[in-house]
Length: 420
Image (cartoon, rainbow, N blue to C red; front, side, top):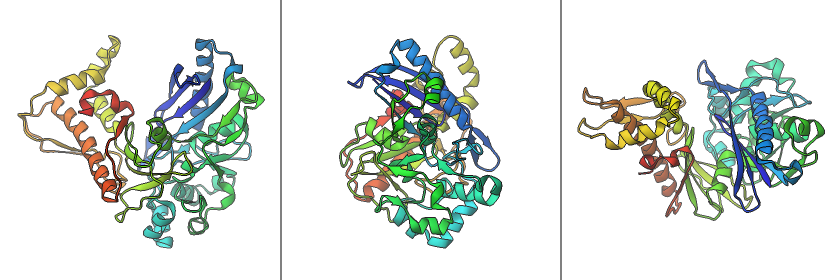
């Protein structure tokens, strides 16, 4: 059996697969994100570890699978974060996660030092506060006592790998989302490190996603219920892992993800650079491929926000009856008449990175009349998120990408209404 962990923004989904790829057992463990201040978002990394430990023991118990039959474990994790740890691998502070964009000043400093175009050419990404480089610089500039004690800066999955094996490493896909990795060299960029004034020694050593980090230690075996020595495959960032999971493994394949964020990704033999720098490039899990992507901060998160804000009472009633509020929202949105007039939703409630680079952007409803009902607003939210993806699709195709069809994955794929 293979045990896989998907450390997402809202929680960890653990799954045991057999060698034919069939799901044997799965478990979801939710954890919190602390949103505060000016575009700040943090998570407690020990919540990630608890999620892994609790769900692993639960699945092994429920499936009655002997831990000796787990051939290996591997990971997907949310990207572009910043977790500083000491030499023992203990967190020095909460993890600054991908959606946090407090480090505007640091990103602007990078742009002044190296130039946006040069940074994009090297890393495949614009120099923005959402990437790890600016977050590391923010800690250096604002939390010097923490910065001087940093041994390594880790991503979500890499922290769990370190807890399981004692190794401090990362993979190419996660490294390529830091604003510090040279896509052509497949290694840390000397120029980006010099411009950011980030020391090379605090970065984890990058490896292919199939790299065996090591075996599970005695302490990790006791905490998780897994067998000591079980091989740990480092895995990759959630976007590139989603590409492989949706079958995007050949040049020209494409997928559209609707989770907390929303993005379109394709497989390419070469990096695709956009003259307007609207899209960006990660390493694919296959080291021979790249993954050009256009990603919005505001996918299912916008829909979830609207559910909580406008459908809260119905949600409580339906959950007590064992029903899903999203099913009701879907059915009532399908049946609503459009006689109230056009209603447009701009979904930028968490700022935006693609197709518009503006961390200060905010959500807007346009065209409200007295005839609009809650169902009209619900439909407008779905349409607004989707229209934003269409702009991203147009930008990828304008760069020469040939996309005949896309696989839709993520929570949004469960909604036939949204797919229409």
